[in-house]
Image 1 (cartoon, rainbow, N blue to C red):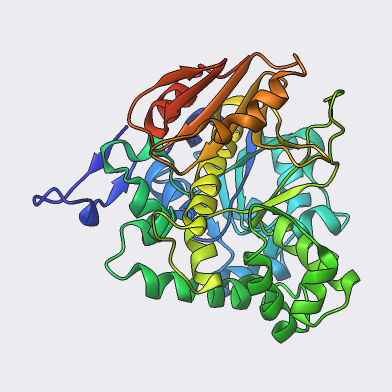
Image 2: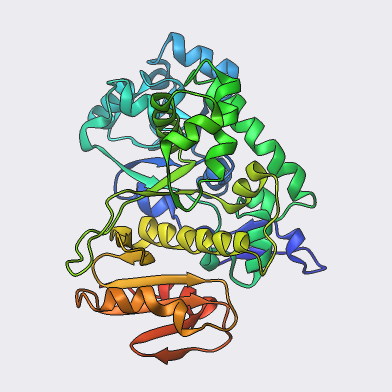
Length: 392
């Protein structure tokens, strides 16, 4: 792990964080799609990891126009030394994938194809390379990547997008992010023509973060049709702004709900869309802390694991925030002193005798065991998670 700092050694001046995703390792095996929301650092990672590699940035209008007219230009420009090619924002010209496919087959070229949305690729009936490229996701910064630069309260206040986490004006940049997303992702890619309606929806959706969504209520609050709300949620998922967390439905003693929950990819973006800050000691901070832990879990899954994530809620009202695979239940509490009532959902789930670990991740300073539940300080949990101790 590398953290480069300025001489004053303050986290505001960190200029580089080594990411977990190792592009050289990935491309040593196969071509890859690399997807992630805007500003998670895809282009930065490419430029600092794959120096000297031929790169086509489709946000550059001249390159975009040139390859739109003639996708075969890539083959014409290749030299014998070009063994790896990067195409940034591949979703802007899906037709390029036919040429990529041909070059993989005929010349053995390895491609890295980056993008902030798979929507056009997945829904346009285009060539997805027939298994010739794997898919990897890049997320905002993690506890493991930040190392000594990690600060929970800073992360919840600012979010973990690299440029914003280290910014000297994070609130201004967070406010600009939503506008940038609307202009560059929604307008430019033509996902919807009714931008005012989508903008209203986006703010309402932010208040649904970490909840089971009532689509009728969202439609009423956003002043759009219920069917439109479903489509808008799909846009958020397809542009990687929103994660869907399915329900764990294997409990027998207590009937489980089947509805999914939804989490935004970055708590700082939620804060900006809700137009409020998450102060410690408030219910909003508890939701933010839960969203942050979800972020670490989803990153671990995508970078290291692949085990499914879910949550459990019974029709009688017991709810456990996260379940890893079919073995580890996790409740998240932004408290420094837990009460027995805080552990009731975990104990109720333990009665099913289907899982092997029951954890409560909290702000408490020390680890302790209470009636089969392990109470963990959040840093202890994160260390153990990234050390692989919660893999089956």
